Every structure is written in C-alpha cells, then in structure tokens.
Length: 291
Image (cartoon, rainbow, N blue to C red):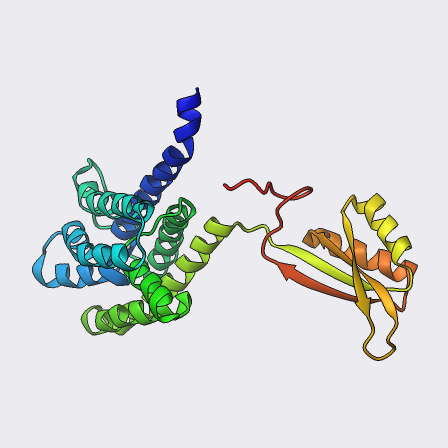
C-alpha cells in the first residue's frame, strides 16, 4: 500500500491530464472542426493548414508544439513541466487523429448548428483544459506562449492568451468566414470560464465585515444560529479616533440574508460590507488539502 500511496498523486495527475486531453480532442473533432471554428493557438493554425493541404491535424499539432515545448523548457523549466506538458501534447495530438479510426465515430460532427457547436465545443474543451491545469500541467500551444510572456515580460495571463489567440482567429476569419470567427471568439471566452471553474471550483462564498456597537451580541448570534466562526479585527475610526472591533465572517450566499437580519436586530446603526470570495478552505468549508 505504501508504494501506491507514495505515487498516487502522480498517478492521479497524469490520469487527469490524459482525460483532459481526450476531452479537448473530442471537442475539436465533434464540434469545432465540423463548424470551422478555429480553436486558437497551434490547434487553430493546424486547422487552417489542414483546410488547404489536408494534412492530419494531430500530426501538425505535435510538430507545432515541439519548438514551443523547447521554449517552455528553457523559460519555465523543471522536470514536472516537461513530463506533464509532453504527456498532454502527445496524448492530445494522438487522440485528435486516432478518434477518426473508431467505428461509428461521427467525423462530420453531431450537428450542423454553429451555435450548438460553439457552445458545446467550448464546454467540453474548457473542461478538458481545466482538468489538465488542475493536474498542474499545461496543454501546450498558446498556453506555453502565454506563460512565457507572463514570466519573461510580466504580461498578464489573460492579455497573453488574447494576444496569441487573436492572431489565429483573425486569420481564420479570412479563411472560414467572419461569422465563424465571431463564434470562435465566443468559444474561447466560454471555454476559459469553464476551465477556470474546473480548476478553482465554483464554490464562491461571501465575506462580511461588520462595524458595530454590539460586537459580542452579533458574534454570539452568528456562532449559534449559523455555526460560523467569527474573527475580531482591531479597527479605529479615522473621524472619531475611537477603537472598535470589526467582525469578520465567511458565509455562503444563502446565509447573507440571515446575517443581515442578525446585524439589524442587534444594532440597526451597524455598518456592514458584504464581499465576494472566490473560495474558502478550512473548517466549515472545503478541505484545505490540495485536490
């Protein structure tokens, strides 16, 4: 059991990378290619070349990623990057071409509706990207270029992706048509949202900071009624100079109304700020253990 436990994190990560790569390949073959939606990056360039030459897309994705992989190794470094990225690139490239050899595989896609192809292609591909990122890997292509620009020149990741993929989509507009290019932009945006949700979770929570003359009363009510922890922060009013504790509590969306009611009942003159936190880890929420 010990050897399995020791290597389980690596086995889990590489399994997620393989599954994520297969999902990306399915999205490309079932939705994006039939609708002439350029997926951006090396895959999008490969689609354009395939349109004119008929060369296998998977093979061109693999060839196109070789120099990017070398650049990534040079600027991003590390054996973990090399192993996981190579696994992602190779498995994705093979799946893109080999899927066509499976019996009854719908090579012409599932539907002729460009909107459905755009939407479902984005969801499936985004989920695949998210699984690869969750396994601390990269999907190659524009992902490597974006990370290099971010690491080397300090360009934000979102801007890096936009710069790299916009060039491909612009070229696709001349080849496939501008309607397809516009839908491709929607696909890229939605796939990014899905990938982010898979990577970081959809468990958005709320935070509340409460300035009140009845801190203990409010804290007790929250502890008893909601069973949520409350933290006292030291605060000083800039105008009055008075020191007053500030209550800090993390709650779910459904509990916001209850907290408002508790605060209003205890101190109608209290000041309360409700914010959004992307994720809460620890007691009462998701485990702090890396997923």
